[in-house]
Amino acid sequence: METRSTARATTWFSVLAALGVAAATAHADGNLRNVKHVIVVMQENRSFDHYFGALPYVPGGPYHGGVCAADDHRCVDGLSCSVDAQGQFDCANTNVDDDGSIVHSFHEQSYCVGPDLDHGWEGSHKELNFAHPADTLASSPADGFVLQNDLSDQPDDGRPETPTDDDTMGFYTQGDLPFYYALAQTFAIDDRYFCPVIGPTFPNRSYLMAATSFGHLSTSEEVPPLPQGYQPLTGTIMDLLDDNGVSWVDYFAEIPQTFSFRPSAPPFVTAHTAPITSFFAAAAAGTLPSVSFVDPIFGILLGSAAENDEHPPTDIRKGEAFVASVVSAVRNGPNWKDSIVFIVYDEHGGFYDHVAPPPASAPDGIAPGQCADLSNPPASSQPGGGANCATASPAAALALCPAFTPTGPYPASCPNFDQLGVRVPLIAVSPFSKRQYVSHTVGDHTSLLALIEKRFMGKTQGAGDAHIPHLTARDASANPLEDMFNFSHPPSLDAVIPAAPGASPSDPGCPFVAPGT
Image (cartoon, rainbow, N blue to C red; front, top):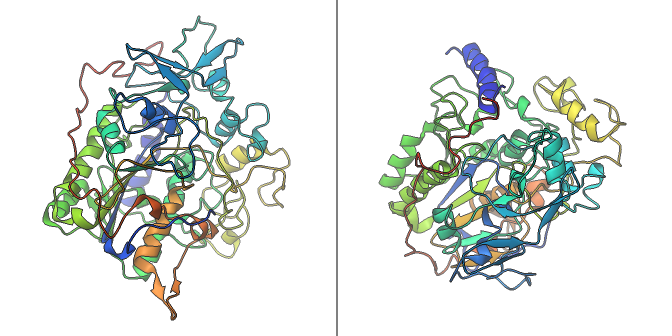
C-alpha cells in the first residue's frame, strides 16, 4: 500500500529532478504597531476537539466548558464530557457507526494514529453532513465522521470493533500533549478558528499564502508549474510583503511551503527561504524579519521517520517538540518582547469536531474545480484554464455537484468557497497575549494575513483613515483577531515556556504499522 509520504515524495522528486537536482471586528488594547515580528508555525491535520476538546477538564485548570457567553473568556467550547476521580472520560459527543451502533468521543491512547483519515473535499463535506454533503452551509451536524471513514480510509472490513477503533472520534489530554496544554493555559487561544476550506492540505495552505485556493481542491496539485510556480490572479502574501517593503523569510526544515508559489532548486535557499537553522540563529541574534513562516519536516524528501508535522501517523510528540523548539527560540531571544508566534494547523485531517463551520466571504469569484490563474493568460484566467487543474479538482467538484462542468457556469446549489472549514487549534504565544484567554472570535488562516496586512502595510491617508491592501475578499473581510492581545501593557511578557517531553520509542502505538504488514 502506497503511503502518503511515498506518494508525495514520488511527485516531488520528479519535480526536483526537472529543477536540476466577515465578522464584526474585535479590537486589541493598545497599538498594534508595537508588534515588530509575526511568526507563523503551521502544523498538519488536527481538529480543535481532537487536540483541545478536553481542555476544559484539566484538573485545577483555568477553563470551564459548556455553552460559552461571548464575554466569557475562560470558557472553552470543547467536548461535552464528565470525568471521574480516576480521570476516565464519559463524553456525550457521538457518531453513528456503519452497523448502527453509537461511537462516543474517547480518549485516544495511540500517539501514532493510522491509517490517515479522509480529509478530501468530498469526504470532509460528508463528515459534516453525511446524508446531504452538498448542503453543509445550511446544516453541518457533524454526523458523518465515523461513517465516511468506515467507507474510505479506515474500513471495518467486517471485523468486530471496540469503542475506540474509530480514530476520528479520539481526542488527547494534557497528559498526552503537556507542552501544548501548558501554552493554551498560559497564553491566548481561539475556539472559533477554522481552516479556510472544507478539504485537504493544499487548498487550505493556499489560503495562508494567497487568501484563495484559486479553484484547487486537491493536494495532488500542490506541486506547481515550473519554473514560475502558481500565480494566483490576485497575487500572494509574498507579493504584498515585497510590494510594501516588509521583510519576510520562509524558514524550512525540509521544503519551504512557499515553493508552490515561488519554486527554487534544492537546497531551496533564496533571499526569502532559509533552512531552519537560520531561524534559530536569527532568533538568538534578535534579527528575525517582520514576518516568518516556519515549516516542519513534511516527510516528502526525508521520509516518514523524520517527519514532525503531526500529520498522522506521525508521533504527535515529535511535532510538539519541533514547535517547542521554535517557541523557545523566540522566547529566549531579543525579539521576544515584540513578537507574536501563531501555532496553527492547516486543516482537520478527518478528525471529529462538533462545531458547524460558519459562512465566509467567497474570495475571488473562482469556483471549486474551475481553477484560474496567470500561468498562461488570457486563457488561464478563464474558468478551468488554470495550471494543473485538468483532473483531480474537477473530479472532486463533480463528486458533490452532478451538474458541474469544468468551464461552464457553476451551479448555485453546489458547495462553494463561501463557508469555512472544520475548526482547528490556534495558540497565540506572545508577550502581548492576554493571559489564560479564550477568544470566541471567528477566524481562519486569512485572519493571520489580515493582521499582517494591518500591522505592516496600513498607510494612513488623512483624518486617521488607514488604507490596508488585501489580496481577496476573504482576507479583506477576515477578523485580525486583535482581541487576543494587549499591546500597551504586555500581560505575558514574563511568561515561562515549559519544556516539551519529545518523542520516545515507548510512545504508545508508535510507530504505526499498517494492518496486514
